[in-house]
Length: 337
Length: 65
Image (cartoon, rainbow over all chains, first blue to last red; front, side, top):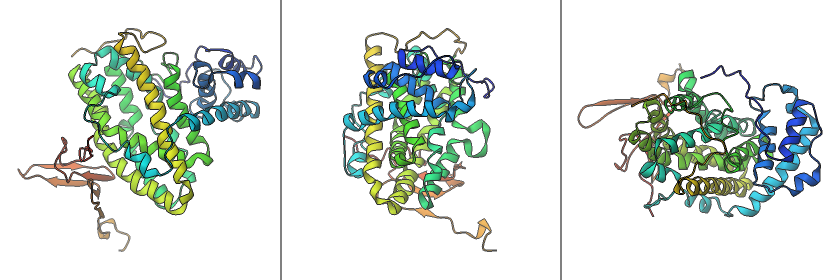
């Protein structure tokens, strides 16, 4: 794992919006005009990368970009315009449940004949599929639990205590070698991938960027704390059975012990997290802020929507025998089993 | 010493459906005498006996459709 303070390079722009944001970050050009933001496809590569660049300043920043730009008013104004389009699209496109129990019911049932990405990888996944999957997911897993930590000051009582306990577990329970982001870096090493933060940003399609932007959007806005909690619950509820299938895929392909361990750990950990999030975090939040029920349900529905889009994208590429990446992986593959 | 952790009762959370939640760390003695342990802040113990990681919950209690 490379030294964590090493900032990633700016990625290649994907259109006028992301190019203009990058020019602004380098101090060489103007930000995009409102008409351009209004005209860009909302789930497209250009808009989603532009938003991703804005958000990344709140995590690790970029090499050669002044860290103070995190709070640059002009950039925040553009980020706000991008976010309003993104949020409006999610509210319009995600399936809508008014009652939280209805939203959760759909993800608390295990399909007998599932057809998702984890089912594909368990049954038919080859090492190259697993490497592509890990490279893309690294955009989140190398900062696993970070977007959710922002919600802590916006909760109190039972919800705060439960959320902090789950986050403590995500961060290794006080042990650096057990931090989940570190466990994922170890998985990447088993798969012969580069563990440097941000290394695979260029490789990831818009569908993946959307899933990470969703967490940052919900995490950075107190007004969306209910949606963040709903999002987090969805991740924890769906993770355990999905992780079991991914652990099976890693075992079957001989991906390596750390690759297997990452998903084995998530089978058990997230079975606990699910209970704590549902009982303490959601239960505690609704006790003090019952008006947030629809927002929590929206967080669930929006997460299901963006994850389904990503799954469709990956499976349409893989079942056609194509790579799911924008740029090919270099062969750093060293593990042999 | 009311603040000593050893004097605090250990809380076990019971639900109609799903695992028993126990404050960790815990040791579990299985029928064959084996002892397994978990040092998680909270531990989910399987009650439906369907878990493939018994005695730990792996969400196998969920309805299937």
